[in-house]
Length: 267
Image (cartoon, rainbow, N blue to C red; front, side, top):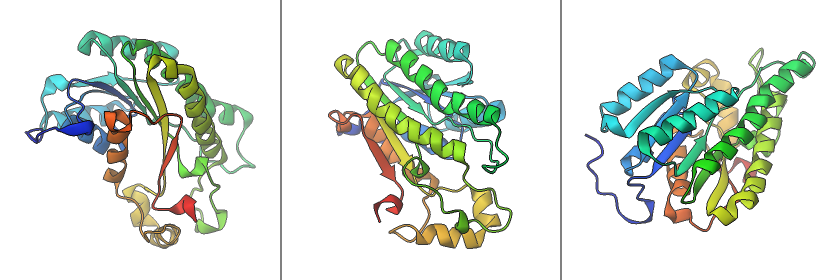
């Protein structure tokens, strides 16, 4: 078992229950592992059932199976949100932390993107996030922490000239949705502060999927050069920030957007 390390100090999450929405993804599987390492019990919600099963299976080989719950979760469906929260309370009896890493983008150019596609994407990115935060907060009887995944493209705009050839550019609806999440984190922090619920956002920088790294090496060089550290992020380098925000180490932090981007947005 990989959970034999001693959990000490402010980062200890023993017995806390964390719902990781979109938890079977590229950046969030290391997040789930880090939370479990600190003693948390986790519910992993994802609409990709193949990835969900794979995530639960691999983590169950490293940590006790009864500390992990897999949920068929669709943030676009309000009933799915309610059913997932209910399932977590039934399994674990409480909810202490929400990590929302769900997102939707269409990937079309501005001229080709329809109003329906834009609205559909942000019914997930914005409305779905709002509904999930509200439902999670209502279930947090003893206070808690809510962590929303934003993006550096919720803070800055992508430079279109960086993208080679027919490579899919970071799309407008994605950036608009992530910018909205930054403000939603601030607003909800004020809304739920009196209930001792903290709400913060994380804005990841360049963490491209491995397939993109292989297919577009020239783009990787440009992306790396935009950072102060001269490299793209490793997929595990978000996990520590999530643990920090989930734990008592950040007990007086709320309404903030933390950039984890190698310095891209600090130039």
